Length: 194
Image (cartoon, rainbow, N blue to C red; front, side, top):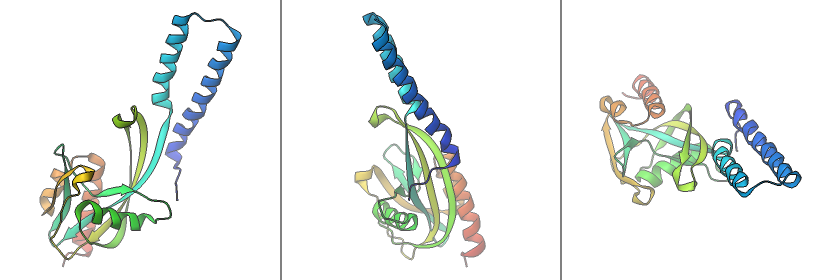
């Protein structure tokens, strides 16, 4: 269920290095008598390094949902337009997650047509002491039969809309999601738009 990608091995090695460095400093503390200011400097250094070395790895899934010549987008409270996605729950397949998240975040019942691929990105979670997170998101091309959509306000969404396909690409905030939107539109127009 949890996938460790080759690209993430570097960060796992960094975490192990952090543990070794931390152990080394603990050994130094027991072998030498540091002044208080030295201990304070070392502890601040270790805290700073921990933000770079400790990495949380999460896996999510989401959907690019089409209805005719429109595509579903969600507007976050900060004004960014994004696609519906969320974390994979325990004992849940990523396709189930994608359908559940589209339903939860936009109140849209969709059907999966095909797997589009993954995107990977890293970010600092300001709500969790600037914890660095590496996220993998699996994307699915979906369609729906109803124009009804409603944003999940509890998750920070302000609007849910079906927007014209030709405008959707320019509205999506993040480059990696734009790449998925471009791929999804090409496949949808080629295979599913009648």
